[in-house]
Length: 190
Ligand SMILES: [Zn+2]
Image (tube, protein in one colour):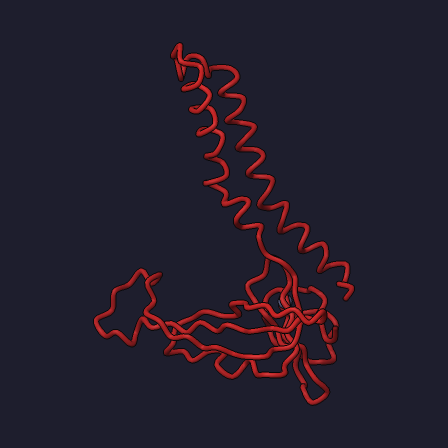
């Protein structure tokens, strides 16, 4: 599969957006250590000093979430199984009195890739009472996920009049080539 140029660019920008702050922070921390390391960690124990340096240099990774946040990939394939799991929403900052208010649905898809490999991916997560996306994914659908986005889109078949943007998830007319919301190219076939 060949991605449109602007989508490739989008992926590259997503990577840079996360890597650059990490590199900047490491440079700042390294400079501070190089200039004042001996004063900040003033000790004769070289091994202890070295471990202090390592801990300090690990802080940028914790702050920026790199490399964990970079671990995503573009994938596509055919849906073999849809699992909708309803759980209590622990992420919710509010603590409503009635439990059903903070249940959430998470949709997992078993996807068969073109090479026959089966992957298991989270496609959606949201408040259960909204019942969003419950019927979006069906067995046999072709789905596509672009690196760095939060959406898994269903590739339209010949009966569909709409196509969803792989970047922002907006619904567009099948005749459009660009998303009316974010302007990225629409993926209509694979
Ligand atoms: Zn869009």
